[in-house]
Amino acid sequence: MPWIQLSYERRVAWQLRLILLPSVLLLLAFVIYPAVYSIYLSLTNEALTGAAALKPRFVGTRNYARLFSDAKFWNSLLVTLIFVIGSAVIGQFVLGLVSAVLLRRPLRWKPIFNSIILLPNAVPEVVAGFMWISMLAGGERATLSRIVAFFGIPAADWLQTFPLTMIIIVNTWRGIATAMILLTAGLSAISEEIYEAARMDGATPRQMFTRITLPLIAPTIFLYMLVSTVSTIAIFGFVYALTRGGPGGATELISIYIYNQSFTAFQLGYGSAVAVVALAFSLLIGVVYVRALKVEV
Image 1 (cartoon, rainbow, N blue to C red):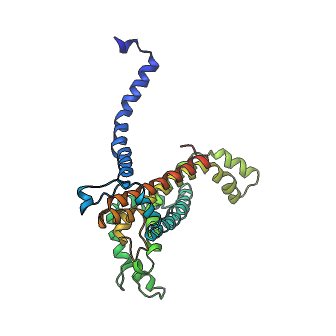
Image 2 (tube, rainbow, N blue to C red):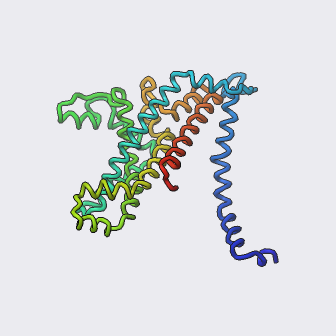
């Protein structure tokens, strides 16, 4: 009986491998294989229509040479950078941290406050997108226009007038809950004895926050930044439902640009090249967070 003859440690190791096998197969099927296939497509002139759809040819790095000279690609990269910094790095993090700190205090309406923050995650992104379209639409009957009318501000078509600002605000609203949950976990790991000792030494609340809380939750903050940055770069459905990347490319994120090139312009090879570059940027950001910032994940 070979299985019985194995040591306990080796049996446990084989059991762990069997448990991980389905996850590894799913990872290979839905992550590794699509990534490798995208790299292959990026080196061809694959298309959805025309001669290239019947007989795609290997074109080497021609798609990449075209990409780096494409003004629309650089515009989508800049829009994505502003969107990520505005919504994920600043908006979601700041409001999520404030929410996490408040929820640690004895608030009277704490369950309601908690539910309001978590509610956006319960709404599908496309449904949330159309809900915000009705709120930000032009005309005096739109929700936001009615609110600002109380302050004497004229009605506007907010998604046309301030498109990038609006999608940053909407995405911040949707992502506060994730930031709050991660940062609450980090705050919960800090022992109350540390704060008690600081109070006995005469530390003010501000000093305790800047010199105790922030340094101790720094690994959690960097982990959140990693997850939030990479996931925000990949956002598609929510913003596409709001603006379709318009007006005039003002909200054309890199994900929307990939979609437009692949399935609107029917250039799968070129769209795959853009996707590969976006993947490289995401991996680079991950390396920066994990290595340079010394985050343990």
